[in-house]
Image (cartoon, rainbow, N blue to C red):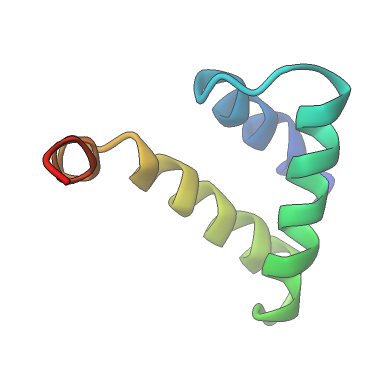
Length: 66
């Protein structure tokens, strides 16, 4: 997961997460993701996919229409 962490922190920053709290939250989320993944790389990939989905047009439209 350490190899993927710079890209994940960049995605988190794009979502408005900043500072020590953001790093802590991201690390905690990765711990949870790791429990459901085969290995750390898959957990990091799953987290990256999740963060990407948060900013898709479909997600934003769905959230705003609720």
